Image 1 (cartoon, rainbow, N blue to C red):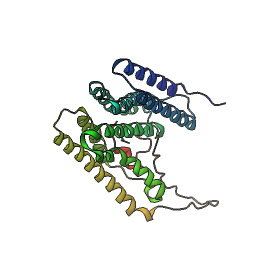
Image 2: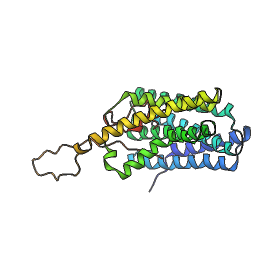
Image 3: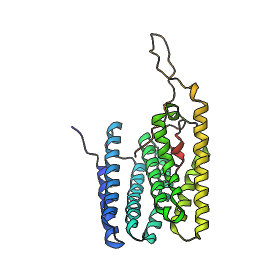
Image 4: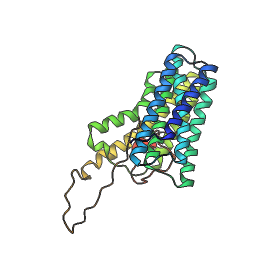
Length: 279
């Protein structure tokens, strides 16, 4: 009989409470409510499945921090969607986003201190990061222009490309520059979203963020293309007394990362976006 993992359910409950608080203070329209709740439900279901596949009943300490960050991202999502029909309350959205970005370093620290890094935790962390960057890209579109959506969409485009091109699903070697680019995306988009600088300056900041992201993705795509023919393409059936080397498996991409400073279960394999985004 399938068991209900309380961690994801508590996360969905906290998401609902946060949305209710936002609705009672700054106000949420129906679309904002639906967006926030939809995000919370998807997160809850995805975590339930992830925990079931791992055969565990509860989230680890670092995962709980990531879940709290994910709840904040759900609130940011609701505010951004509500802003489609009126002014977005930046006095709430900016601090909430800043806390969500800052907690990315906290869950990484907790994972290292407690030795609880896992594939599920790394994936969860990455997906929360990626979605926050996408939402921030949507928020700053009226200020900068529709081209800024490329910042939030590049990671998802990379995932789709991996579905179509097998060589794009290869494992990448660690690269510290990815983490630098990842952190830069969140910080620059948050500054743009705060709308405290002149429009030309915000456009330049967004352009810098996009340029860095394109360079980082481009570097990794080039590396995957260059090494595409060196990867084994089919399995060989082992025979008695024969030792078959096992190739590294690519990291999993997409709860549906922005990556992050959080340690990963496998430090050798590294998907491009696993470090292409902050949170």
